[in-house]
Length: 188
Image (cartoon, rainbow, N blue to C red):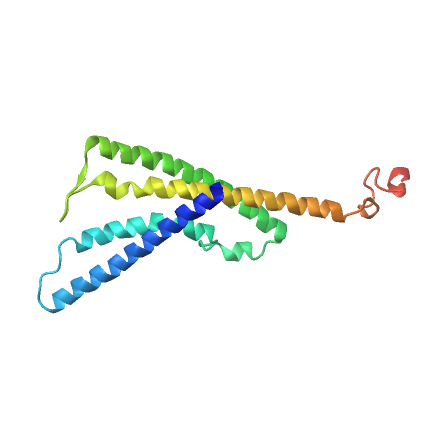
C-alpha cells in the first residue's frame, strides 16, 4: 500500500516536472519570437525559468531513481560479479538513504528559517524565497523514501539468493575439510 502511494507521488511529481519543461520550452520560444519581432519580451521569463530548472530537478529525481536510470559508474559495476553488484547496490542505497535524509533535514530547517524571516527574492517579480526553495526538502524526502525502498528490495534479494544457494548445496557437496560435513571430514 505504501509502495503504491509512493509510486503515485513519484509519478505526479514527474508529471509536474514535465509540465515545467513544457512551460520553459514555450516561454523561451515566445521570448525569442517577440525579440525577433522587435518587441520587448516578458521580464519574468528568465526568473521563472531559473525556478523551473530547480523544481524540475527535485521533482523528477526520485522518479528517475525508481526506474534505476540514475547515473552509475559502469566501469566499476561492470567488473563486479553478481554478489558484488548486490553488495554495491546495498551500499549505494544505504548511503543514498542516509545522505538524502540529512539533506532533507537541513534543507527543511533552511526553508523554515526563510519563511520565518520573510526573506524575498527580489527580481522582476518579488517572490518569497521559501516558495522557491521548498521543493528541495520535498525532493530529498521522496528521494530518501525511494532509496530506502531500494535498500529493502536489495536486502530482500540478497536474502533470497542466500537461501537459494543454501538449499541447492547438499551436505555431501560441502567443501572438504569442513568439520562434520562428510565422513572424511569427521575422520580426517
